[in-house]
Image (cartoon, rainbow, N blue to C red; front, side, top):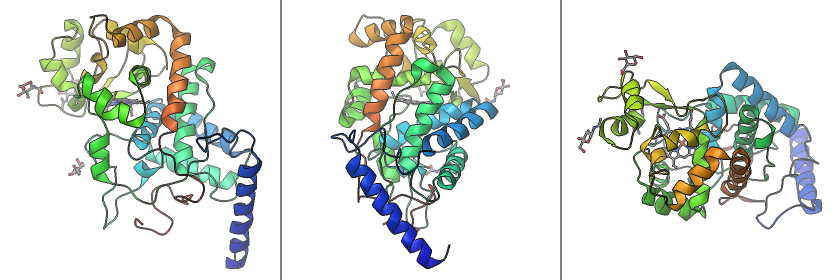
Amino acid sequence: MAPNNLHQYIISVGVIVSLATFLNPTYGDDGLSPDYYKGVCPQALPTVRAVVKQAIHSEPRNGASLLRLHFHDCFVNGCDGSVLLDDTPEMKGEKTATPNNNSLRAFDVVDEIKAAVDKACNGPLVSCADILALAARDSVFIMGGRQYYYKVLLGRRDATSASIEDANNHLPLATTAFSDLLSRFFQPNGLDLKDMVVLSGAHTIGFAKCDSFKARLYNDTNIDSNFATSLKQSCPPSGGSNLTALDVSTASFDINYYSDLLQNKGVLHSDQELYKGDGCESDQLVKLYSSNPNAFAKDFATSMVKMGKIKPLLENQGEIRSSCRKTNRGGYY
Ligand code: HEM
Ligand SMILES: *[C@@H]1O[C@H](CO)[C@@H](O)[C@H](O)[C@H]1NC(C)=O
Ligand SMILES: *[C@@H]1O[C@H](CO)[C@@H](O)[C@H](O)[C@H]1NC(C)=O
Ligand SMILES: *[C@@H]1O[C@H](CO)[C@@H](O)[C@H](O)[C@H]1NC(C)=O
C-alpha cells in the first residue's frame, strides 16, 4: 500500500471504528461490548474460532495454553495484551517472570490468529488483548461443548509496555496458600472467593511440570497416597519438566477437576487449597461444581466475563498492535 493510501485507510478505519462505537446500543458502562467488531469486521470472530479450532485439533493442550494466557494477561495490569510483548534490550517484559518462564506457551498460535484476523479485516483492527479473550472462550467452547459458550466483551486496546516485576508480583504460584490466593491475587482484581473457585476450574484442561507440584508431592499430607505414588514415578524430588495432566480428563473441559479435589487428587498445592474437607465456603462450592455441570458452566462464564473486564485500555488509550509481540513503534513507550 502506498503511504497516501495507507494514511487514508487509517483515517477511514478510525472513522468507522468511532462510528461503530457511537452507534452501538450495547456499549456498556465498562466500555466493552460483545458487538464491538460487528460493523467493522464481521469476519473477525469466526476467523479467531477457525484458527483456535485448528490449533486444538493439532494439539489439544493449545486450548489450555490459550486460556491460561488470557488469565496471565488480565491479572497483570489488566487485560491489555502486555503478556505477549517480547523482551527488548531496554525492558524485560512478562514472559520471563517466574510464573511464566518456560511455562506460558501458544504464542505461535496467537501469532497465527493475529495474521488471519488482520487479513480477514484488511488491517490491524482487532487488539491482541481481545484476541486472547476470544481465544480463551473458543478453547473452552471447543473443548467443553455448547454449554460452555459465552459472549465475550470486546473493545480492549493493547498496552505499550510490560513489566517483569509486575508479573512476578501479581501472579499466584502453585505453592500459594488459600488466604493469599484470595487476598493478594483475586480480591485486588475485584474477584471474590466464588470467582476464584470457579476460575480455578480452568485446570480441568492442560498440564503442569513436575517443578510446579513436586513440593506438594513430597511434603503435603492432604494428597491421595496412590495418586502421589504414581506421580512420583515421573517427578523426583529434584524436579524437572516432565508433565502431568491437571485433571483426569485433560483434553475435555468438564467438572472432573472438582471430583479430583474431593478425592485429594488435586495436582497443585493451590488446587487442593480449595478443598480441605472441613465444610468451609470453598469446600461447598467444590462439592457443588463436582456434581452440577450446569452450575459450573454458568458460573464459569460469569467469572470469565468478570475477569475479562479487569482494567481494559479503551478508546484512545494504548494502541491496536500490528504484531502482538511488539509495540507499533518498537520498544516500550
Ligand atoms: C488460583 C490460582 C492459580 C494458580 C496458583 C495457578 C497455577 C498454575 C500452574 C503452576 C500451572 C502449571 C504451569 C507449569 O507447570 O508450567 C498452571 C497451568 C494452567 N493454568 Fe493455572 N493457576 C491458577 C489459576 C488459573 C486460572 C484462573 C486459569 C484460567 C482461567 C488458569 C488456567 C490454567 C491452564 C489452562 C493451565 C494449563 C496450561 C497448559 O497446559 O499450557 N489457572 N496454573
Ligand atoms: C528463564 O529461563 C531460561 C531458560 O531456562 C533461563 O536461562 C533464564 O535465566 C530464565 N529467566 C529468568 C528471568 O529467570
Ligand atoms: C519439603 O519441605 C522441606 C522443608 O520445608 C524442603 O526443604 C524440601 O525442599 C521440600 N521438598 C520438596 C520436594 O520440595
Ligand atoms: C520423567 O519421567 C520418566 C518416566 O516417565 C522418568 O524415567 C524420568 O526420570 C523423568 N525425568 C525427570 C527429569 O524426572
